[in-house]
Image (cartoon, rainbow, N blue to C red; front, side, top):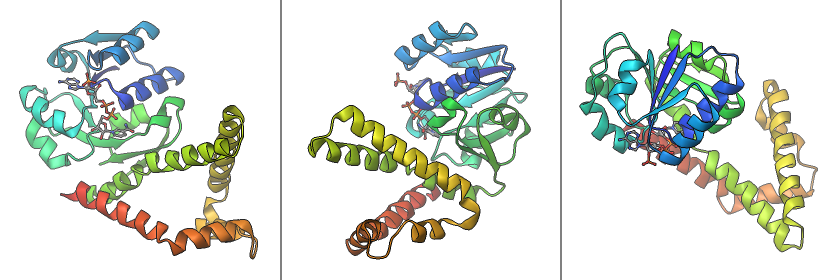
Length: 254
Ligand SMILES: NC(=O)c1ccc[n+]([C@@H]2O[C@H](COP(=O)([O-])OP(=O)(O)OC[C@H]3O[C@@H](n4cnc5c(N)ncnc54)[C@H](OP(=O)(O)O)[C@@H]3O)[C@@H](O)[C@H]2O)c1
């Protein structure tokens, strides 16, 4: 298989790192020269990765093309490119709908995918919409695939995939708080990352019970966890959280 990446930013590089940690057989990977630093680093690290400054050449030389540019760049760039009908196109462009994309690139063999940066360690869910044999062939090596027929439903997953930065901000704030209380930064970072890793692992192990049970079980009556949850609820923290999800969902559906 020959894969071409249009746009070599955060998510493209995470996928490429994941690919080289997996057993997938790839003949060649072509990447855009943008971002220059990321592209240089990848081609230096992996022999099969070749940089091209010509997006059309990347398309012509690859059997599968993964679109990894932002929506604004995509709207400008894609109409200028030709996508032969025999190519497999996987778009990661968040706010560009399938039908709009099909019209722009004049190609029917298109699917949208939502991989996330932990894909670099072959971890995390990957939404595919619609189901697509070729995309499955690649992503089954890189994480847990969830195939979605209906684009509207996949937009809900796009919304929840936007929780990453807010999640990491909780880790960041908790670590800084510990440091302000006099803890060594290395130890504080170690503690917080191990704490959230353990909680996430526990959530995966116990997901069949539902998360409501975990919320209940992690509170001792009148204990510390109960206090924090109560205080956050009182400040409408979780209402604002749901509001942010609703707003990002609205943006997806525009
Ligand atoms: N990051 C994620 O977790 C994630 C997850 C799923 C989907 N996505 C989607 O994937 C897309 C890319 O996201 P990202 O986070 O990887 O963004 P990013 O790091 O900003 O990457 C976008 C890349 O596109 C490059 N680019 C700009 N103009 C170009 C052109 N004319 N030809 C080729 N490449 C060009 C940029 O290069 P310069 O730096 O030189 O401008 C940059 O390296 C977005 O649509 C996003 O919604 C992201």
